[in-house]
Figure 1 (cartoon, helix red, strand yellow):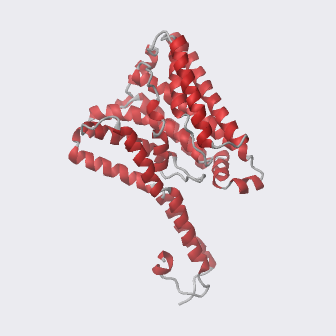
Figure 2: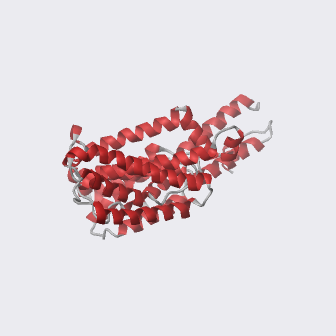
Figure 3: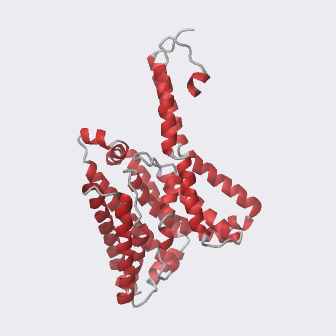
Length: 352
């Protein structure tokens, strides 16, 4: 039997690489399909229109916040300020607009600017000052959360969001929530930007191998600062949509978004070491978590179990993380490269 030439081996390696990269994002799609099957059998009310009218808006809000977290994870970081940003943006929205439609535009712009500012502070402390992202973002999040409570006590006259925002959030173009369509549009933009634009590919490259990116002349710290700043903007968008869905802002506004976005990103198969991530898989992970929470409530379990579910989801996601898939991919490539040039290759050679 003649030995395969180098070109054939190269193509085979590319096929294996593509398959394994895709496989790192496959588990969450399978998990979502399994959840739908279980719900259809044991909790059919979960898949009824009434349930979806609740699930779709809230999963969209979680998905947008998770996209922000995904950008940070792609730079090998983590952001625990999400709940604080969402809380302060919600309170500032009603505080600036004073529940009036005339003040809504200004309130939205202030929220977006505030989210960007908090993200920029996180980015500078992590990317430039080189502080630990876990500790820094947790501290910044607590500071922001404390100021949010103070602002709400001193400046919020009405807890109601402007009627135009709540009316828009309640709208259903093509029979589906307007919030959902907004989330779909944002997800598509993020996915296309990361995959098909030069800045997006550089962003992934910097996260995957910062040292190599620095040697290639890329500004590594700038990308880290950008990741946290963009994440802050997406958290602000999530807060605006959440305010529209909930109609009013309460003291617990945003509290449930501390762990949920992290759980969604981990379950979606993002590489925790930085680099690879999928916006569409993150969107599906947010849907799966929201759907699972709704199932638990229909089963009669306490809403407090939501945090247990998110914590368990993070652990499970770590066990089947994309990093483990990348390690497997590396072992497979080393096996291929170490085979003698004239040797006969079998299935056992690949899987050993």
